[in-house]
Length: 517
Image (cartoon, rainbow, N blue to C red; front, side, top):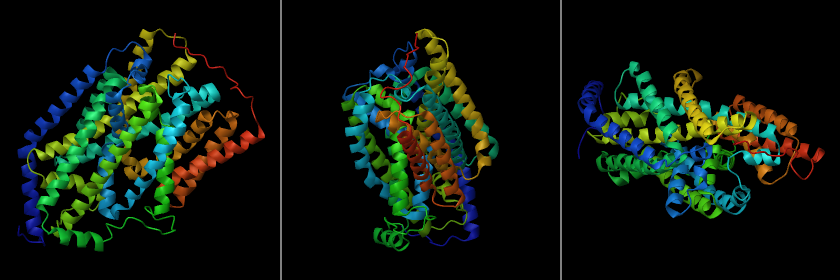
């Protein structure tokens, strides 16, 4: 394959105009693929949702999803829930600009698996819980559960809006769409996810999440394969470029806290974030309770790790592939922002139908994240607020209220997505938001699981100081990966010191009463 490696301005403009027109010519093919996929996923989720009679059926499937098949689905669902449309964009952009340093985080997954399998799951699932934060109220008190639920709401509502905004912008770039398409795309994705989540329940979401995880992998493989087969260079030339440019450097041992992807920032920051995600985030906790036993939860988490590793490696391959592509085939119209390079590549290089496949994969990631977030936040409203402080409800009232909560949460996140752009760089902001709130939540959950009751005021003070520590880390322009460790270590230390100063009785001071009716 012989072609010029230097594109002059006239040629670049002509090529861009052709690709823009080609996008419109092929849009019908791509839209058929996308809408056909969406229709199939919705039908599958509604059919697989099973019979729903109360809040437990909607939010934890009543613990009925045991067995090998359901364990596989839950494992893929956990992985899919955290590989949002944002992840589908950010990891290729990170590797495109900074190389594969982010992959150093993979060495911590086996340690995480051991901790969950032999410590967390036996204590958490063995506590006989029906709802994710029920253990906090049982062992620490109702006020701690309410505060934790409130922090989770703050964390995930903004996160949902960000997850919806970023893919919408990518869709516009991939489809060569004008700005006036933003709201139709956001409303279409947001409202579709909201209605679907309201009707499907957690069981339907888990089944479709598993399928969507496979769809994401297919989309990534197609992109990498196209680059490998069509890049204007030989394999040795590509390898030499990637090595000389530093893209293949895995470890950065710099002690500069302002460098984002040093080995220290990755190991400390991502390990803390993973612990918070897998042990204190209701999205994960819901799925553990759905399988109902330690063995199946452990199997599901192992499959989750395998899925995460595969997708991370593939997304890194996308970043390396696009970096090589545009090094050997320069494009003067290439976006300056690394976050927009992958969508630009999809829109201007992939052939008919393949672009639709990638759009469907991105939509799969977005639907998965939105569904999981809406369902979990609705569970927080229903279980941690309404059923804790309101009057007892019948199973039918629980079901109706939980569906109303899904509608309200989904609609609110959809509307907020239009305001995300005003917050600045959405990718960095989302990382910092996760770090700010996961640290205090992880502290509270660890003390609850260890059955170490404490006076809630110490955790509240620790959480406030932890948030302050996270803000200081951001103000100092340190790597955003240090935000989560700062908030966690501060809140944990203050809570532990407070517990030493004030030791409550062996039993939790507040008796837990199930108010399900």
